[in-house]
Length: 138
Length: 424
Image (cartoon, rainbow over all chains, first blue to last red; front, side):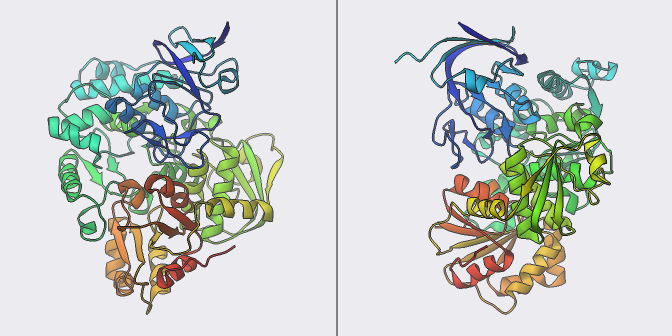
């Protein structure tokens, strides 16, 4: 079983399905909090819903509204259930904190390469590990 | 994270439950970042007043105290909100009373926002209502630690003013305003202010449009890193650097750039990098054309319903330039033109006669907001034109409309003829 190790951003443990973005994500102007979908037209995941998924992405870009938009997904019940990201920024850190989901960064491998969309993950952000349990169950 | 005795006292409730919640959020945030400590700030720029459906619901349940507690302090319940501990301003927000009858924006939101302004004003929040606080009196000094949000203001404060801020959010600025503290991380440290990438313009970069296009290129290239830009650069003014930074913070996440010989922390290229200078990436005619095509790839129909100027909020020079371009002309019957500006500068434009010229042509100057923030454009807009790379980047996704990007003159031509005829 593949295990990646990283640094705790927000502690907590969660199991679920991965949604992998190879491109950075915008909050404001990039997601619709009402539906939990990515709306940036030039984005590889435009139209894809992240609700209930463990979002794996390189990092946050764009407006400082990032954290507020992801916080709103929590208030509206459309949030991802975990976050795994490569590049630490204030937007991503504060966004993970106010979304209040287990989150991990600074991993020993590039998570957007090691993990594929649909993989079942066990994210133990308290211990700083993410286990790839297997591919998606169809 | 190492906390001072004051930090611990605030966390433990010595200054009341709202300050305790603020410190709890700052600690969680600082630990998420891996910050070693917090630092003092006495200049906070955040957002609190803008209505949204989620915020309107919180206000209905427990007033602005509940909205501030949940959204800006990440608390679970309404807490009594004390006065701001340090000078704090409100950035851009929703459309205000001057938009009624012009923008199709809910009047109940205009009223809710006016109510918010009164609530926060009583607690010491300056209602600047602009994405460009540095244009209307909030000018941090060089080296000053501040806590700002609004990506275009953050990159301006760091790069052009030499102040020190990360790209904060609604929660961290709310917490900073009640504590005077923010995680000492990233842009607050000397070592994280030096350049990482060298970008050399091999074509002339001159004028508002080209500074925006160059910024869009640089942002896409370096993402959240720190570019140092050199080459065939005409000396930029405030409006051009405002556009350059906003564009670089839209295509990427640039929070700090250096222009050697122009910006304060870069007397020359060597100082900008504080060590070895990396090999330059070139920006030539092909790259310039590619940026232009990217910014125009959301345009298809050349019938323009709406022209948008003033993103980030227009300077007086930009308002005056628009007035000159519109003087004696009349907008096409099917096209509207809005210029976004800080209210303080709109007052000056009124006084200088620029507003009258713009309105005589059929255009409007609107304060406080923009179509992207308020999700509101003239009714029926399908295609808009703008001189702002940031709006061309964001507005198609936010409003589901087509975009054309070009110069002020091309935008005014589109407003007058109803047709987009721009080109590189």
